[in-house]
Length: 230
Ligand code: SAM
Image (cartoon, rainbow, N blue to C red; front, side, top):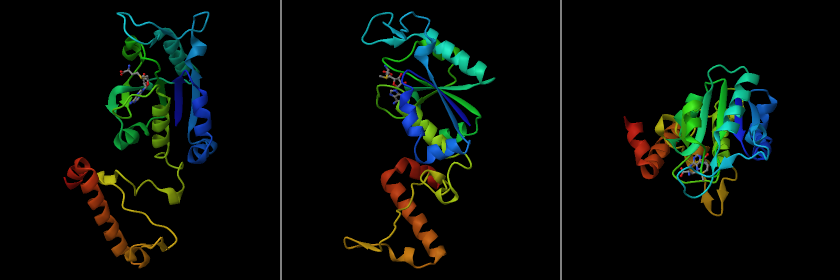
């Protein structure tokens, strides 16, 4: 899968993509991350990418020309026919695992990171196919949200996780949160690992884990619990 990122701050992506599981996905050639600096495509002689909002008000708005030209460059140089272009915005659909699963089926994804007060609305009409928010709060830019999408989508692509890092058995599968996990030592600061996990009886372990998942989901996320019971 190829991610194409449109941003004013390309360096933010280098360090995250160069570590741990993301790094492995890139090295294995399963994911590719191409970062484009919107400023490089500005026609303005000072490489300006923002301007005052029509109608007045605080802050600056990203101008449409450099974004549109970055987009054209991406689709032309990568031969992308019908791109899915995701604008990260607090006004978008709130992100969740099922959206990650849906996007993970694409071959190419273009992520548009806004900054300042956001982008000129005409860009949404012209090129954006999806608007995604990572939650009900406002960040300074779309770079962290874009990384959240890249991370959560990449780990769903076969081969990115090792066999022992499977995503089959984790939170949000069947609308349940994950059961508690324990590792060595058996006793820590007077707290013991639940006996059943040491029993070697896999039927009992599975049953314990399932019951714990249900209990935690019911307590913490009644909204999910309702869906899980359907
Ligand atoms: N004026 C905008 C509003 O009130 O909706 C907020 C703009 S925000 C300061 C700047 C940029 O950060 C946005 O264009 C968007 O790309 C990104 N951003 C901020 N919060 C976000 C969120 N919760 N989810 C996704 N992107 C977000």
